[in-house]
Length: 345
Ligand code: CUA
Image 1 (tube, rainbow, N blue to C red):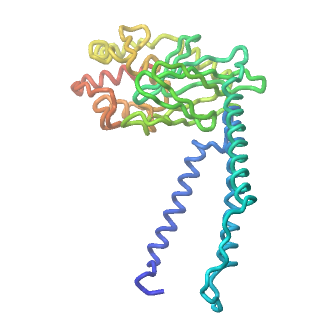
Image 2: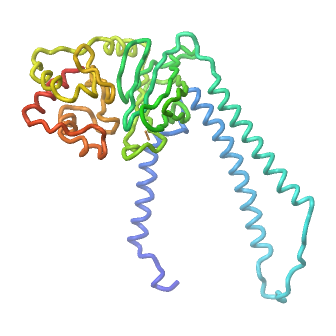
């Protein structure tokens, strides 16, 4: 090997380090967004089909690779070759039939299995007492409503852990307020699109408590990548407590009345709702129980006083292209406004 072509060692080690770090990072991410660790029936069904397809394609890969290696080794050029062409064979009905019929059969079987799985998930009858939730995709956040409970929240869907009998199954109605989005919580179910002027259905039934991360899976504009969704599966008791807390009207803390005045006299109320106040906007997230959520703006930013203030001062800085405008309030008004918003627990 010439010295020029040799890869310098530090570069090779750096590359190895990069690969190792990438694998570790993807394993950590896979833990949160993995189709390989399902905890809900529709995701189990998807994994069964995916495993079958992987096994069949791995088999095809092995057969093709083996034939290729055999051909290369068995018919390689040898020192005593006389340089003449080997006999040329044209047309073999058996071989042509074999390589047409076998692949067609494989494709037909995979199609049937896939169609059957989709049908089984879509046609599943919801058990009596299933929880109804409506999820509306917006650029770039998720509106979540529980029509029977009178609750509106955003980006964090709370559900009870479901038992074997199906209690706690959540029937989702998926809609969009603007463009096409896609609801995808890999550990709970396959992807289902949210399409303007359509009502799509999906359902989830998480068996284990936990926070399951989801991601919009249909490109929907600048902040498509920051359209995260969290499904919080909790014990039926915790879920009931959460529902009761969400059903309460907004806290009216007299200590924050100056901030509330700022809120109610700026354009905030055109887009946001706080139940029990003049704010009834529907364009942005409902803020009645804002601080009961753990994240800000459907992103990975933890929701606290500091991040909330930074967001209000300049939403574009936190999430470039965000639909919420900077309100250009002076520092004092921003502080008062944040004082008020953090009371909305
Ligand atoms: Cu919403 Cu991508």
